[in-house]
Length: 326
Image 1 (cartoon, rainbow, N blue to C red):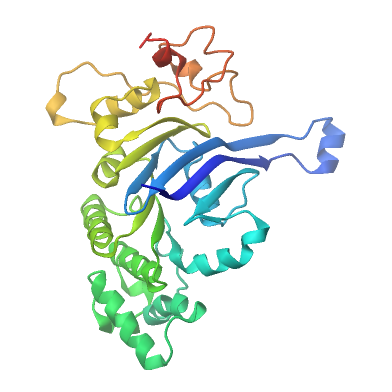
Image 2 (image 1 turned 120 degrees about the vertical axis):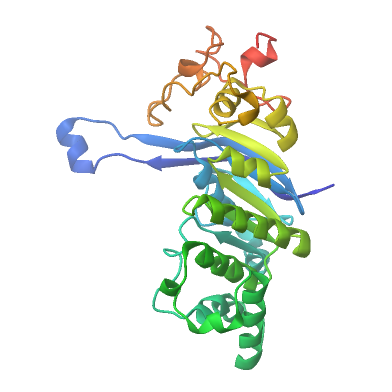
């Protein structure tokens, strides 16, 4: 099956240097932070690909580059066979825009508090000129509110009148208003209570089954990823270290970092089993360690790991796994 989303060698470098005068006075060089380094993956239409990792691993930067909110320093993103970076495909990209939407982490911050909910949801319909006539637009807004478990009368209220979970339902309705096929969720449930998280995740799965949606799901919560994802990519310090079907990754994690993350997840089935806690912290991304960036925290690291960057082969980027030392 051909990929709906293709990400190839994606890279993003930020200039984090001090102002020019400070650098001259303090005799400091310019400094650069590589947030994403040669990341590549594919997403098949109708599936959920999740990217998981600790804070600072580059997950959200990847999400923003995929939807076009942030230009990549290098690499390419293709969605429905349209390049998101090639200037020659600008017209095709404009036609594709309506089919790509993002669901943000904080549903309240992503809405205009002075607009009523009906206007918020109707904005993509008007922006892409999808429906003619105010009565037809109002009817469609009511239909979308019903689709996400709210009432058509809620269109007259302001965002502050809703709970966090209800606001996220409104954000999903707004994303679907443009007839989107590909949704990118950047930690869409992390700001919600656990019980409400489950409701939103179940809603997203139901909508995927009903409308044939494709998801890129960003999260640091492995329990959420296990519930949502078809395939999972594990990121560490800007690089993908493991990519596998969700069932395989949770049953047989291969990369030492993936094992460490899974060992930290509470599991009643393994009470009393010896666990390896997540030790250490992510190194400074401005000055990462040479070789495999995970080597300072890895129990399997050797001299090769400290000097040579492992390639992502057969779904895992680890010298120890590739040499059979795991």
